[in-house]
Length: 294
Image (cartoon, rainbow, N blue to C red; front, top):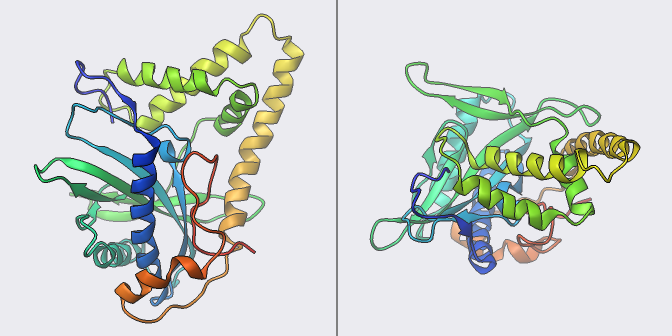
C-alpha cells in the first residue's frame, strides 16, 4: 500500500491489534488445514512481511484498515492437480473456514487470496493475504514458487518464482546485530510517508529502508574499515542462502495428524493437540503452526 492520502501519515499499528488479527487468522487457517487434509493436501503456514518483522502500518484516519501476510507452503498435494485446481481447493476450504467469524469469503487476486473483515460502516477493518507456494528444488538448493493468477484475457494459473533483493536477509541480520533496527523502523515510516509511486508495494518500500540504513551506517560508514565491511558482505551471502534452506527444511520436517468431524468440531479441538503453542508477532522470526516440528 502506498501513501495515496498525502495529508495523512502512516504510523505503526499497536501490537495488541496485530496479535488479535494474527489469532483470528490462525484459527481460520487451522480449520482450512483440516478440511484440505481430508483432500490429501497439507501445508505449513508462515507469517511473513510486516507482521513477521513487527512493522505493520496503517493510516489511522483512513478506511483501509491493516493487514497481515501469510505464506502457505505446500507439503503434500496430489500430483494430478493443476495450479488452478489447488487454488480452487484452497478458496473453497477458506470459504468454509470463515463461516461464523465475521470475515468475508476470500477474494482471488494475482498472487494471493485476500480475506477481509468490514466494520458496521462498510470500511475495511482488517484483512490477511494468503500466498500458496511450493518448493520445486531440493534441501541444498530450494526453489519456492507461488501460484500466480494471470487475469483475463489470459485467464490462467501458473507457478512463478518470487524475486528478492540480493543478500537482503543478510542485511537485515547485520542491522539487527549492530543494534540499528530502530533506525530501520524510522526510515521505513519516512520512506512510506514520502512515497508517491502507486506501483510500489509495502515490501519494496521496506527493502528501500533497509538498504538505505545499511548503506549509510555500515557499507559506506567512514569509521568502519573496509576489511570489516568485507566480512559483513561474506556473512550476508551465507545468511541469505541459509535462511532459504532453513525454510525448506522446516516445511519438510513436520508431522501430520488426521482429523475427522465437522469444521466446527475441528475448530474447537485444534490448538491443544499440537506443539509448540502458537507464538505471536514481536518475538522475532516465527513459523506459525499448530503442528510439532520433528
